[in-house]
Amino acid sequence: MSIKRIHSGGVFEPKIGYCRAVVAGGFIHVSGTVAGPELPDDVVGQCKSALDIIGKALAEAGASFADAVRVTYILPDPSEFEACWPILAETFGANPPAAMMISAGLIDLKYKIEIELTALAPSA
Image (cartoon, rainbow, N blue to C red; front, side, top):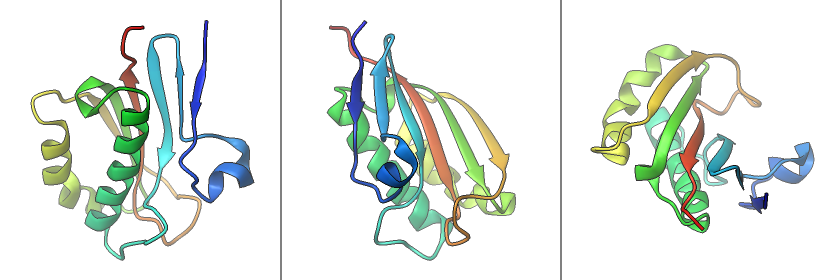
């Protein structure tokens, strides 16, 4: 079985020792992703930024959000999640994945949302 590792250049990847996504076993496993270096102050902006990073990783793997099968949202403040719903509904459209939202602390207090996703990999 071949494994493809996708790096996004995020600051935590080399510090912690992980990559943005791994393509293996017919799936694309996207690591928990927070907003990029130009950090928006609000949860909606951070959600959009994290989805942009995830979308780029999926594209590099030859997939899109339509291929997502599972997504987990982690927010320190669960009351902020509802503000993200329209963005998520638009992102996944007619192909919504199974989903879960967890309330937990993130790696840094400045982050308001982290998103982890699994998608089907394209057939070889």
